[in-house]
Image (cartoon, rainbow, N blue to C red; front, side):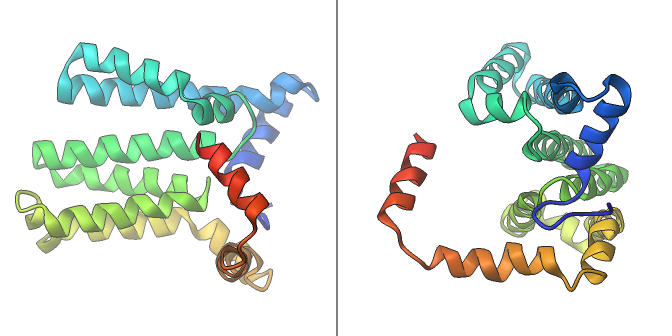
Length: 202
């Protein structure tokens, strides 16, 4: 479908592609998410090398690989796998724009952000942090007065249209679930849920 109740469509489409290639076997579910995980490592290594040198690239890949949450989501059919890839890609493209001063990099950054948005809603925090960064960083605040970040936002929203369309034709079910219902459940304190949350963080 164009989207789903709990998550956007990217992970379902990834699973469908894996099944089309390999059939109904466990590897088929994991194949495309594993490609996304490898892509995340490659993008982060390249970005770390550009900013801090080759040694940092190695450490970026090692730390990414051994981080438990990333390790689990990389090898399984979770929406985090494509979301992390597109997050890293967006971050890398924005860095290119800021570092080189070439506004054209904002356009593929917007596309990558949009693809991340149809992977998992959590990537919206990248946009929030980017706005905060541009408003508070003196060196890069000049971008706020250019059309490039706004064009990137428009491109991201265009890529997000499958989710918008699905929600519009399903009484905004996913938006309601991720918004109102999540926030209302967050206000209900449960010692067991809190202990579980702490365990997950550790």
